[in-house]
Each structure stands twice: as C-alpha cells, then as structure tokens.
Length: 151
Image (cartoon, rainbow, N blue to C red; front, side, top):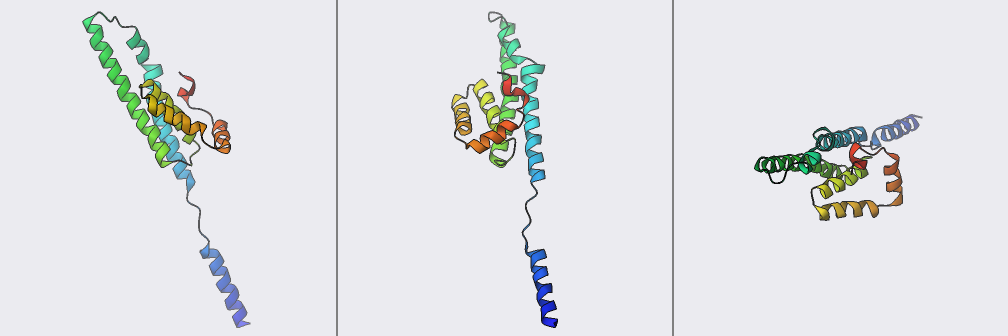
C-alpha cells in the first residue's frame, strides 16, 4: 500500500510539473499590434493629416520657393514613410506568427511602392501570393489597416 501511494504521488508530481507550458502569445500579439498601430499612424499622417502628396503635386515647379518647399515636403514624406516601413519590417521579421503579419506585409508593399522601392514591394506581394491558403484565409478574416485601401 505504501508503494502504491508513493507511485501515485510520483506520477501526479510528474504529471503536474512535467508538462511544458505554452509560451505567452498574448504579449507577442500585443507587441505586434502596437507596432502596426504605430506604423499605420505614421502613414496616416502622411496620407491623410498632412496630405503631403497633395502639397507636393500642387506646388509651382517654376518658383524657387516652391521648389524648396517641394524638397522639404518630399523629405518629410520619405522620412515618415521610412519609419513606418521599418516598423512593418520589424513585425514581419520578429512576429511571423502574428495575426497582423499579412497586414504588415501588405502595408510594407504599399509603402515601399510609394517610396519607389519597387523590388521591395514586389518581394512583399510575392510573399503574400506564395503563402499557403490557410494563412491567407486567416489574414483576410482580420480587418485591414487604414492604409490598405488608400492607394
């Protein structure tokens, strides 16, 4: 009887403490979503709040003052979109299992295209197209970010 109790206690201990715990994915997901929100905020400033494309396109190209303004606006646009691109790439590299992975890939491609980095945009679009059907379906079930339809 004593051996039976010891055996049961040993088995219970192994069962209780021997199981491997799953990693905490809520923190990882939260971090990825925070990065996506930050990147989307940067792109939103460029496309909606400052409307830099509109400002750049509607400046007089013959005026020296407007040429300088155009350069300044273009630099601001490239700087903000470059920072957003870094955040999208961080999500893609650090959080490949996140639910926002495909949003980041899609938005990275759109921003890269807008910055005339066509090879980067092509690579991102191909990564989406070459992914498995299950990954695409899961990604499409998630709401797209603000800039997904802005181009």
